[in-house]
Image 1 (cartoon, protein in one colour):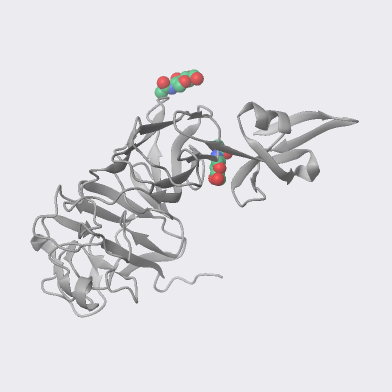
Image 2: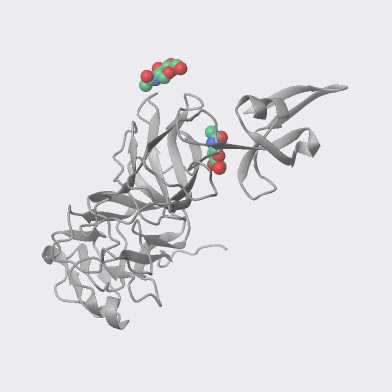
Length: 346
Ligand SMILES: *[C@@H]1O[C@H](CO)[C@@H](O)[C@H](O)[C@H]1NC(C)=O
Ligand SMILES: *[C@@H]1O[C@H](CO)[C@@H](O)[C@H](O)[C@H]1NC(C)=O
């Protein structure tokens, strides 16, 4: 958006550019007056001092109609005792907004129960065009995209059960224009635009939890990777150096009690409860069992490559952890591979 403001001897035009405030939060360059109007706090200077870096921090019960708004627990950065349902509403800032991207800057809610259910605390999202699974536990650093459903608002609802001074959250909420190059394909819950990166299941963590599962139940979503020009296939492998980086079904007792990596890679039709799907893989190591499989579970993951597009990984978890002990979910690294015989500049 281009703003024109009166400025002494003439008019100065400037865009509502992104900026970083003195305390490291992302804001938008706005005039001091506009920042105050939308409930923001100005810090630092933009546009040679005629604007401020305006950061909008919102809390339970608030509504946002502006970009780059933060939504935190009451008394953030202090811990929150819980006991309420807290709702935050996102309203499109203009007609040509298609998605909200929510970055979990801080996200610690109660861990799931022994079935992986968010029984005490959880985040639910309503009002969007796409379904978002309920998530809880530790999710700092993760992100999600939610498609707007026409002009309807999107609600982030955080329920917190039994009182315990242990929760903290702060989410950055961005509004993504329909023509924005970083808009995720519709329906992708997570979207990565890098050549390499790490995808983790929600509540993935390297420490165990008393209920013996970190893996969340009732998940069914897609993680999309933007295919880069000159790149034709993608490798997936367990995150190196992390013994628990693929513990999806069955017991993970070796990983949990002895610090030994799991070796039981399970594939294909044997994966019926919790699994990830990667279409049409070629195994880059020894092939575990049959070929022609797209489902992966167990407590180890055989590195693979696929050239099926779009690049997508689907996560499916059923409603419980019956038969599974100590599963933490997955942490998988992806690396896009250059096209064969196609020269790539740069
Ligand atoms: C959204 O609201 C705008 C007016 O603000 C209207 O022109 C448009 O048709 C509405 N879109 C839908 C899908 O209802
Ligand atoms: C909102 O901010 C993000 C960066 O945080 C930017 O990518 C996006 O384009 C902005 N949306 C609009 C509508 O300007």
